[in-house]
Length: 426
Image 1 (cartoon, rainbow, N blue to C red):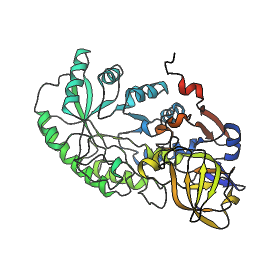
Image 2 (image 1 turned 90 degrees about the horizontal axis):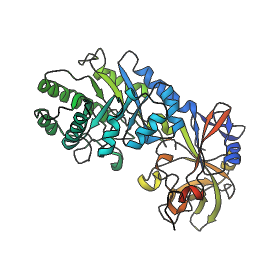
Image 3 (image 1 turned 90 degrees about the vertical axis):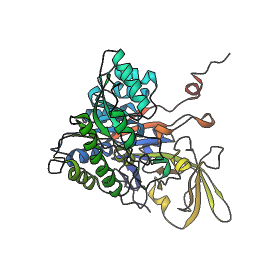
Image 4 (image 1 turned 180 degrees about the vertical axis):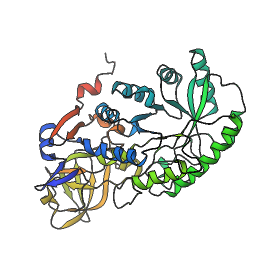
């Protein structure tokens, strides 16, 4: 049987989050339910802080990965900043108590209303992705009597060797400004409402090797030199984005220690940069990915000649990553005994009326797993609930945060009234 994660282990034969049995949570809150470990969120944040100690830095959690207010509050209280890609995420971060001075407003398509909303708060900076956006931001800031602090998002044309849907640093991707665009805009003098103080990159997500980061860092340093020679003054900070992968299956991504060593090599006090810039990071999956599981119950086991269909009560509306990206999630029985014995190939599927509502194809599962059993989808803490939908008029799951022997509900399960509450019906 696959090994569960560090903070999700079997205790007396029952899969538990920290010290709380998932059977207890299923009985109290029902299924499907996202279950998170408080300590699992904080441990990678501490590792990043430890790896960057002595270097002026700010770790900004990517809110898109897990936007629950209680999760954001937990990370903000631990000192994290936030990376935002919408006005809604800005409001979430502020509602959760995040320090506005630790908020970075990213996003390739900020609306006029979102720009104005960002300008209304003393944010750390805006990551700007086009000349048109820079002009709009400058004009709006000037009209408001302000000068926005800006980082230009540089597209370094580096292949992150990840799924094409989460590759963001290639020339063909929609993100960022290419070198020639940056050099051209710096020679224009029509951006009086902004102060170009930084350079930002983000080459992709779920990156499993340090080499794409190394390539991107080298190109970033060259770009910094060119920018400063035109500006005639130094930049203040470099936003290196996120993207460090986690193990979903048998992957062996670089450790946080190795990743931060690479950052120090290129940008630390003993590098050619000599620690001149504040370093920002935007981890999302790195912090949240292995911090949660999706708890689900088997509805039926449907035998066929070549394989069985294990139909669970979670659907692609609850966890869309397998349908969207073909992503792998380990699926384990909550009761260890149900995972023993003879195995048979299974498709693990949900109740949604789409053939893509499939969590696993031809997955060997114990033949003891049957209707009524609880299963857990591991590594579901990032891009799980934050990408959930109400397709098929299915309410989104509950969310529970575990802290040692205690736990609390941090999002109620949606009811039918929640689903139709915003509709205008006569």
